[in-house]
Length: 145
Image 1 (cartoon, rainbow, N blue to C red):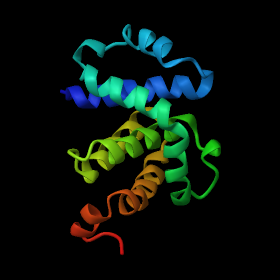
Image 2: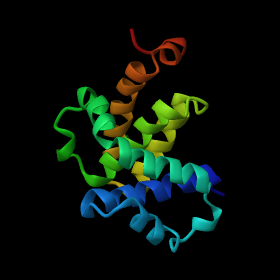
Image 3: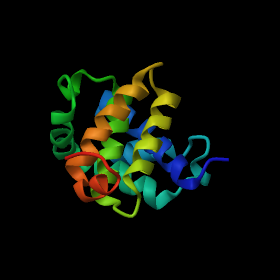
């Protein structure tokens, strides 16, 4: 059984995928997500925070991700890009969620929606990003500098 937070991340990823491809406004994407399977079981507050937050902060989040990538962020698959943006947003704004949980959720999202080995790439990028965005937490877990 999926948690309400997992469902909210899944729906946010689907919405951001759509946003990356279409550029549709957040309100239009939210309206379409309301009809998605599992919407009623999602953490609506978390979904709204992630979806609107990532769209509003996409440039800043992309800039934080870029040093951890091996190519321009625009060259990533839309699924990987959406998942990485969700994780970067959670690293930044949801300090209550341990970084390992953020990474694990991102890996699961990538396994669900992405290519066969995309999750390995996402995991590696987020390991680096955790050190940059949550250095104290990452060092406490024996990662990073």
